[in-house]
Image 1 (cartoon, rainbow, N blue to C red):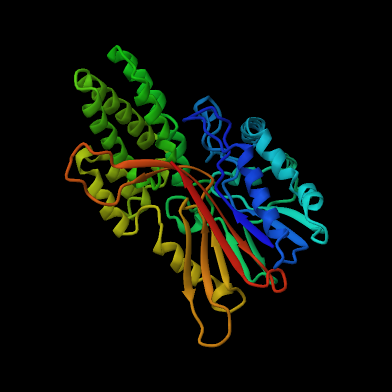
Image 2 (image 1 turned 180 degrees about the vertical axis):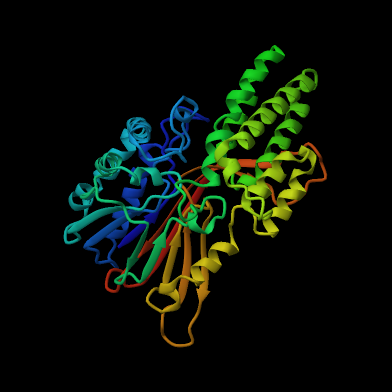
Length: 423
């Protein structure tokens, strides 16, 4: 049995709303998997838990605001020390969750019903775009391996192919034009968006709110949710929605508070656009790069951002979701050659199961799964509201995972996909 989950985004809780998924969530996962192992229709001797990227969130931290190397700087001793310190903070802040993960092997062997003993349990870790730097140094690989209970701290793979389970799996950031690392690059535009824009906006906002004479707690709490927003091109629309919400809830002090939001956002955008690394991604000979689309989106008046964001998405210049990943799954070499029936990605934070191809024969259909996330997400409403001050973003917590069975493990099923939300 192979179990895939991704995008836990464990952080050091130094920034944003400081939310991390609790260890009890993995206890629930353990109990769910034990119920499958103990079922009369299953015969499972091997369990592989595949952590499909963005497990450790080394970008979402206040550490990058302090003097020192940035994610796009050389991988020298100073960078190793910075990443090691960030990773140490993440592991410490989430020790309970990691303890549950490390204990799965013993739990499955000891808690299985008579005659249902599991012989082999292993965890496979594939880094994503928020934890790719964990793979850069032997020290950080050893720290990650120890936290997850891995047998080896050799360089972690970027994809998994299993002939037994006929699956090809990867995080999926390579299909996102904002987060794909180009050849010869150490980083990507998405890293700069997180570190210099998303991480700094709440701090800048609190500073400007102090100047207005009053800091409504709900505004700071709302600003801290910015990190949970997907995709990046929705950020200006989210800022606009925050301004509308202030206008509605703070009618007397509204103008001063909105001015603070505008000034904080303007400062964050200016710092982002002035970052030398961001400038290096903008080539004069190509006006249609992802950085050009993002610059345009950040510079236009806030009232125009929503329509412009939709246009950028249609042109394929923003972070790819939906059909982009389905097409990528259909183009996987293992799928085209018939060596795999399943493609599994993470990254999008949207749990998905879609058919790629069907067969007229008895061969298995080919299916694309996305493992969603294990965290809070902020989601833009899909339909226009006739009321200008209606909330246009809604938050909820999500948890999802996919299961594959090889022949003989489950009499009834080849796969399962489970997801849930709480709001």
